[in-house]
Length: 422
Image 1 (spheres, helix red, strand yellow):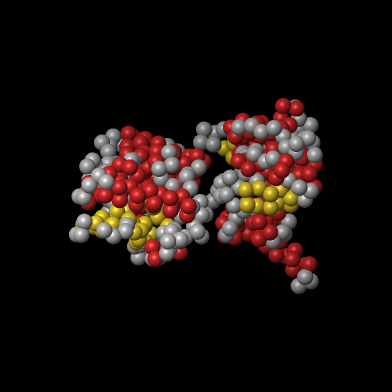
Image 2: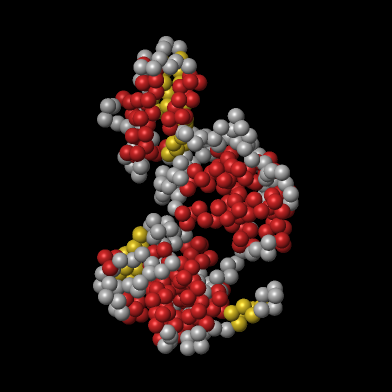
């Protein structure tokens, strides 16, 4: 009886591949079983079985220990089934392996599942840790709650779409260009949502369809059509100038606003997201730098402490104002920006009902981070140095993120020409 082995299988255009358990037993019987695990080929230890000290997944993979332990458990389980329980039918072995290691596995051959139902089950599996991230720096890790928020909203939107048009169901084969046009009309005209919201919904729908394709639930490629696009758009997010930030910092305002104001100033002077600056501790700071691991991307950033930020931190014994929830923060910073004592509020437009849109209503927890990036850019600090603080990896993403016009860039170029006497 041969020893069970783990093999790596990869389709031609895939970034990563699958790990399969092969087991020949009883002379003629052979089990080929997909373990449910995927890795990049560089992480697979080819012919690992030739050495007793080697494992299928190399140590250069972040979760090699967990993956190898799981594979060992599968191998021990299937050997026990054959040797001790005398289970010889391949179909029986697969069924018992599925029950033991894939209790929530989809069974499309037994029960048809629609697109919306699939999305719902998919999000439940991500939420419960049954589906992990398959690529990128967080490969093999669970999805974070924040990363499930937009897909969850997309699922709610799909359910509303089905209800609005009186559809009995929405199948995988229904996701085509006709659906795209009707759904676009539903989001933009009926629900009065923005183009950015529609772009987010389409991005999620494409991801859902791609994952369902990998689960072999459909062969439809309607979502890959050239006109089934995730539209680009200009963000309406704002930033505050250094003078406006100074006005917030120096204004005499009620004491109940102080902790939110100071939290906002920390964001303006450090480029940290709310999820990061609301969780800082004194151990993250030394005399010159803040060192933090970004909650969203898990990348590490080192941020120089400018004088204005040092003034804020010096007000608190432990270095930081007391934290609060994001809804409370967003509501309060709008109130602060609207105060006459601050003096930065003004009308910036009119909504569909004829009401004035005030500048203060557009300020949120993310405005501080965007303000930092934009102001540093306008001061002429090199992009790559600013990106070391913001955590952006691509300069194109950074330039799209900041709120700087072509005229701003031209003025910076002119200033550099003057400095170089050109």
